[in-house]
Length: 193
Image 1 (cartoon, one colour):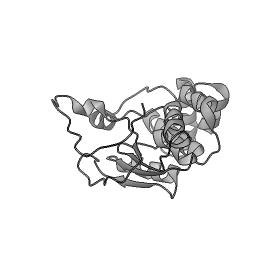
Image 2 (spheres, rainbow, N blue to C red):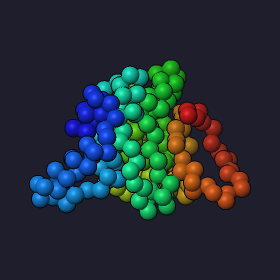
Image 3 (tube, rainbow, N blue to C red):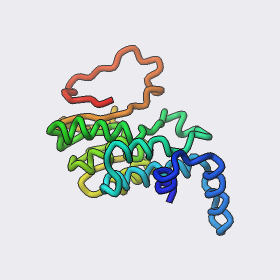
């Protein structure tokens, strides 16, 4: 799999991605774009981490450096300011919040494909996630499993509740352009960066 390639051999090159994409097209299927392929890899990474198939800092770092480069950023990614967090950051968040702390209920308001939350799931936390992109929300739910509840919604406009031990997020900072003030009335949570 692409994750196995990344974890065993370092970064997956653009040439390897192009080869995998064209081999898929040769089998009579529609050729996914490099962006589609990266989305699939991210979801697969989230799943192998969340289910404990790989764990620890070394594995998270290997997966992080193995992520293929962004060869293209389509209009959706630019409009929604989508940028996935490397698994190594999620591993540190899990160590801080779950293993070293007492977080069992975690809010991830911009969950994407679930990479940031995956290690927390593996450590025993339940995730409540929101994602504005329906395809990404479905991939995150599938990757993170049944103890997680992922909704397709803009967390800034949804009723997200307030029963969480922690919040982890890599918010779409690009969407904040022109915003003078961000009001955080009732958020009393730990943040891991």
